[in-house]
Length: 169
Image 1: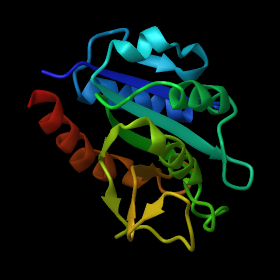
Image 2 (image 1 turned 90 degrees about the horizontal axis):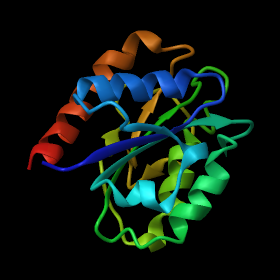
Image 3 (image 1 turned 120 degrees about the vertical axis):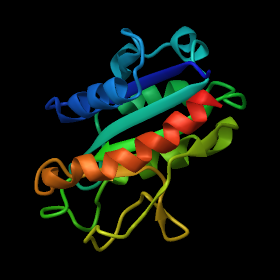
Image 4 (image 1 turned 60 degrees about the vertical axis):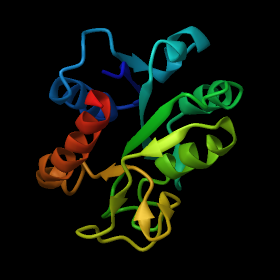
């Protein structure tokens, strides 16, 4: 079984709440959910699978604490790590930068050697652009807790099942 840690950046608490739901659904031990502001190299070393979450702010920017967190991660050899991404955005107000933050984290980690899992299709999302798109798919799980919170559970369910399959392998 793979050790799994969730690292989130959350300004209003929405991404933190989603991180806690994911931890509960994956039956992770207490202490597996961490604020990116507390990120250290030793913390990263504890986990095989890193589930990284960020909200998108301003005009498609990372949540503030992720800038330092991403810089730390960029300096670590993550070649033995697997990474899954999730993010919170607002389709109704920011359809042209929807969940950009997960795309920014994805791009930032390209030189670290990590392996990504958990990309999802664009079906059911109504947006015009996102930095989280690669080859016609999202690089992680985008969620809209502002205008489509009624869809969160149905979007989370298959993504969590994919992660469970990886954790148990």
